[in-house]
Length: 280
Image 1 (tube, one colour):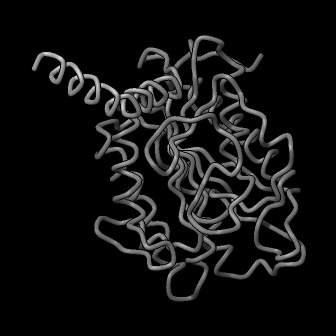
Image 2 (cartoon, rainbow, N blue to C red):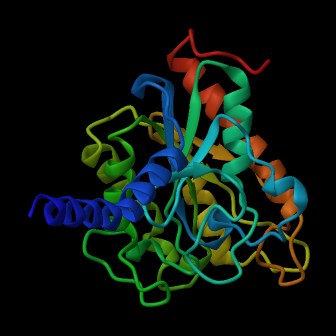
């Protein structure tokens, strides 16, 4: 009888072995995180030029030891391109280069990117409960939930925004400024941070694409909000180039755009926090 019990116990332990190995491997695969106050988070929001459509090259696949991203499953992994996953064809965007630039300012911090942009989305989709069928998602609600998940591990430091192409129509462009002001206020309220920096990237100003009156209207809204609303910055896209579609920034321009986002972010924060580290 004792021998039978030992055999049964042995078989039970053997049956658990794959589970134990799986758990052990899962633990070992987790990216180690710094203390919460040293893990600086940035939400990436908007449409396809924030998501990124630049062609991925080898340099975009090299991990930075202090730049992570929250993947689609809600796990922290090394930030390599593509950072986003909203649609097929995602590629190089501005977020990763921004993060590497900010990480270089302070060796004690790690940057965590929260990709949440949805290609093709109008600002009307960035409202509570709004559903966007192209990505089968709720852009605003999903951004909130992903950011709150990320904030369990780190500290939210800013929002990077690039959006407006979808609203460059006679019907939508006159309403854009008010809607973006409401969105900024809503984000700050939801994250309980009235001083949360919000950085707006300029629409692509490509020679091959006509700068319509509606696009000018969106551009004015971006510039005016950056002047009128506290801790909002505007990033110029002057001189950046597009892919053959004349809509999306190419990979080299996206990397440059990320650097420009970082420069504007630094200037904006340093105006309010003299102790914020300058670029090395």
